Amino acid sequence: MADQTLPQSHRALILTSTSSPPTLQTLPTPEPGPGSAVVRILAANVLSYMRQIYNGERQYPFPTPLIPGASAIGRVAAVGPDATLLKPGMLVIVASLIRGRDDATAVCLSGIHEGYSEGSKTLMRGEWKDSTYAEYAKVPLETCDLLDEGRLCGRMGYEIGNLAYLSTLLVPYGGLKDIDLKAGETVIVSPATGAFGGAAVLVALAMGARVIAMGRNVEALERIKKRSERIETVPITGDILKDSEALKSFGAVDAFFDISPPEAAKSTHIKSGILALKHSGRVSLMGGIKDDVPIPHSAIMHRNLTLKGKWMCEREDIKGMIKMVENGVLKLGESAGLKLVGKFELEDWDEAFTAAEKNAGIGETVVITP
Image (cartoon, rainbow, N blue to C red; front, side):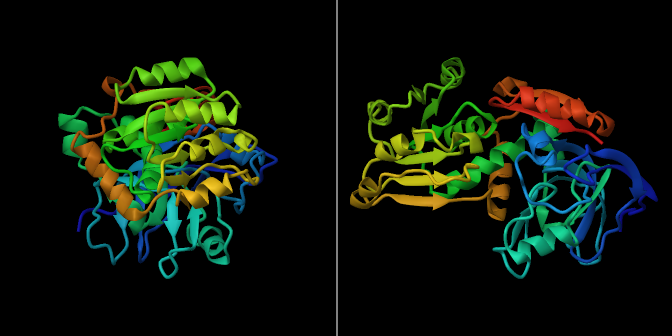
């Protein structure tokens, strides 16, 4: 077996309470056990609302103290005795979504959200409490997926930070796959001007669909439209019927994908998007809205519309997304109009959070590089 020697200690951010900021500490390096791997973190994603999570503004449930973090790109440093594929030195993407092995409905987001079931809380309050804003992270084997380093970083010329955008793309891919978006179909993406909405536009295009992008920022919509002749745009005006008619002016609409932030609870675009769908259309709800939203019950019933909710993605979606990128179907990096905004050390986490807040548009990535 390859060398699995780990340093005795490593550096990590520790959050003890939402009332105080994270601090950089030196801790014992985690050791792998059955069902786990220890990964040397190379680039961990920073969400645009990371500060709101860890200062308590978003009121996400999670235990403290913990090592915060998100999905990441890393290199396997050591594996447990039951690992059959992963070996030290391999480049992997580490997904933040952790599922119970004996109950797939128990789901938590590493370092971010412990979920709402007793099972999901068990996952995050116990074995998988600590995340990736650290030099080393202990993670479940099944959250690590191999990346073809020779192809991605060699022939394609991507740097590690570029690969971190995979995690952003995976979120909308989960929802679009869930409603079985097909090549040649038309999908509304709203709001399309943020980080995940913009990623949804790119993913839908790579899946062969035509996209109608909705949003309030007209200038951002214009920039999105320039990316492909298969993109149309409709500004959100607040007039439900007017916006719905504008959406329908581009022809039959097969699907509506929503990934609204919590602040969009009173927005009219969800109802406009649903009303624009053709008979037997599909809806994917992936946003962070906590409040109830009005839906056109009669239209949903008479048109046989399907509404589905989706939190993140499935394991097979990760493998599918990796194939799309490795085979060049979905491109990364500056040549694809994607920007690695900044790479920050652990001690510069505050700057990283600020950079992510200010750069939350389509294709923009901020990472922490422990």
